[in-house]
Image (cartoon, rainbow, N blue to C red; front, top):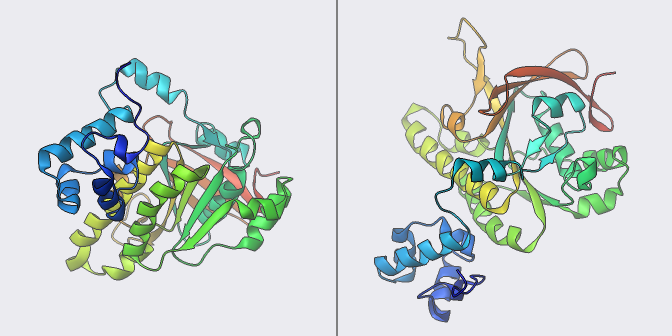
Length: 318
């Protein structure tokens, strides 16, 4: 490998001169990471470079990022480097195998008031804690699709964690997504922002609401699922390439045709069953108590636990 120069800029890639690099940037391929996950057809179309050249450029970007066949042992070693963010509830952390993981999508789903947004607010604060306190010394991005973000809540939770509220708020980048296309465009922009800022957590609250509103009815289902699938793959790439934790929330709807088992199920159908690494169902209990249940996580045992929502944030029951 000694004779290969390190790939840091687009122009370090073979066959990419300043003018091609400019075209790539304008088309949204502004980083090595964005190029690595592009298809040769996409790249060829937007830049006008021949398909074989586009293939070589993408291959070089992937090699630079170490995207290749790996042994199971290498995977094990990588898995051991995954970091976790505390939820501020020991019960919930234990259920999640130590907290919310980086390089993974965690989906929180449940009915209105089950605590999804509360956990997202808490994680936006906790990601800023030092590693020995269950944080990642990093910043958060909060993509708000339903207007549920409350700075007042962040202030309370920051105080509850013994942090300076203004400093904590300074480290959370909030953006309101106005429709599904805007929501997807925001993720594209994030590839660039994450390269410049120490962002370790990306939240989409909620991931499905715009898609549901814009593609109602059975006749639009295929289109909706296709776009949602593309969006989730964007988020998976973001999580893996930048080693960030991605948390998405999802409403549930009642299914009156289900007589046995749980009649509520996550909106977005089966697309969401395959993409997230960890799916957590949240339910209301008495008072400020909530029940969390692991529904699907290949590396975690199924189980459930109780946590509470207090004035200072997410905690364990007394």
